[in-house]
Image (cartoon, rainbow, N blue to C red; front, top):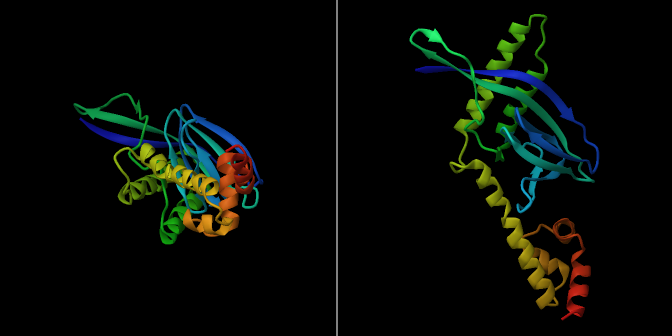
Length: 232
């Protein structure tokens, strides 16, 4: 039995760059591609997972039933291009096309950082989809299917993640938890200045360290040190 796969366009839209916006997506019955067009933010899947930091050029794939909490940065607000579509397999058996069967998940990574050249190519494919025009629906659908097929095959060919890309992405994000625990330990057990702690935990500078520590713990690192050292 052979299959013919169809990608059916549902909706294309852009989340505008509004500082600090928050949204929860639950893709109950549709596939989605989210291209980070500009800005930065944090994505969270599951209450026990660490936030996943995203920035311009990143691409995410959300399968059926995937819930995602999205939070935009205040100083670098997120702008996201979102592409929603259905995927159907049409089986061909004994010289007959059978009833289309919905596909729940595609074998492409949930999250991956691409090179600048790869990101430019992905951006061009999204732009092409956005610009599809014409009065004939079948012509528009045919062009959409062609462009999206190229994009999905590109994502497969450049995939270097594990066989479970959803878990792989968030396992990588858990490195943030290790850095957070290291920072807490240094704050409580040493008198090192903030710059030295930021360097020891792998942050580019003291400002970035303070921002991420507040995001993770809801409190500034200096305040965390003062409050917890007074309790010891």
